[in-house]
Length: 398
Image (cartoon, rainbow, N blue to C red; front, side):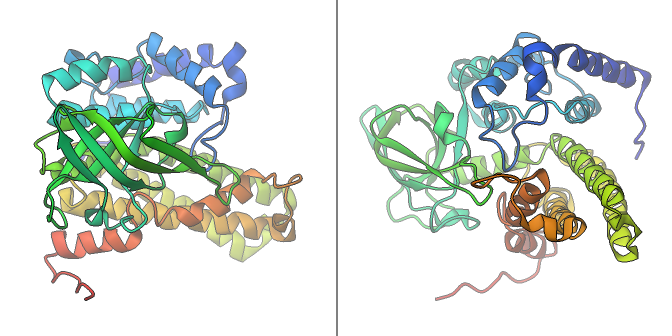
C-alpha cells in the first residue's frame, strides 16, 4: 500500500500543527503532557476547558461525517490530526469515550432521535460519557455480565455493579451492557442502555491505583432508571452493538498512542545517555530493539487501518486489532522494564513524599495493566485462534 501523504494532506498537517502551536499557549500552555493512561486524574477541569476550546474551533469530531456535524476528514487526515496532536504534547482529551466510542456507535446503530439528542452535546463537550462494560466477574469475559435491567412502563430499571469504569466520577452518562431477558446466557439477551449518572440509583466509587491516581471506578446500580427509548439497537441484541463499539475503540487514535510511545522511548534513550548506561551493550541492544519494533508497529497499524472498517470486531482484517493489541501491550511493558533498568537503584526511590512518582516509575507501574485492560492477552489470543484460524474453542470449566 502507498503510505505517502498527498500535497493536500501535508497542507492539512501544516494547518493543524500551526493551530496547536498558536493555541497551546497562555492559559493552556501549562496543560502540555497532562492526562492520559495512569494520569487521567490530572487537571480535569482545565483539560475540560481545553477540550471545549477545541470544540469551539471545530477540532472535535474530525472524523465524523459532515451530516453529523463533523469535519469528515479522510482516514489519512485523521491519522495526521492524531499524530500532530500527540507531537504537540497536547493534553489528553476528557471527551474520548463519548467522541471516539459512543458517537460512532450511535451513528451506526442508534435511532435518529438518539443521534439528535446526544451527538451535538458530545461534539460540543457538554456531556461526558463513561463505559459500563466490565464487572467483578465479567472483565475480559464480557458475555458473563450479571447486571440486569427490566422494563417498568416507560423506563428501564437497572441493577448491578460495574468496575474499572474510567472517569465515571466526572462523567454525566454511562453506556451499560445489561441482561434484559431473564434466563438468557452468554451473548444472548443483552441490551445496550444509556443511563444518566446523576441520580440516586447510581453510586460511583473511585478506586485508588498503584500509580496514585483514581481514574477507575466502581459503579453500583441500584434501581437506576433510564428512559425506555434509550436502548441502542434492539433489546436483547446488545452484544453486536457492544462489539461494534470495541471496533471503534481501535481506530485511528491508536496512531497518536504510537507517537506517545515514541516520545517515551526518546526520553528513556536521553536518560541512558545522561547517566552513562547507554554504554552498556545489553541495554543499548534493548533500546535499539524497542526502536525497531515501534517502527514495525506503526506500519502495521497503518496497513490495518486501511483494511478494517470502524465498528468491525477484533477478528476483522485477519485479526488485525487483536494482533496490534498484543504487540503494543508487550512492547510498552518492555519499555517500562527498560526504563527501570536504565535508572538502576534510583528507580526504587520515589520522587517525593508520600508517594510522588517519576514519569518512568509511572510508566513502569501502569504498563503492568496494558496486557489486561481493553481485552486481555488471553482473550486476544482466543479471538485469533477461534475466529481467525478456526481452531477448536477453548474448553469451558464445569
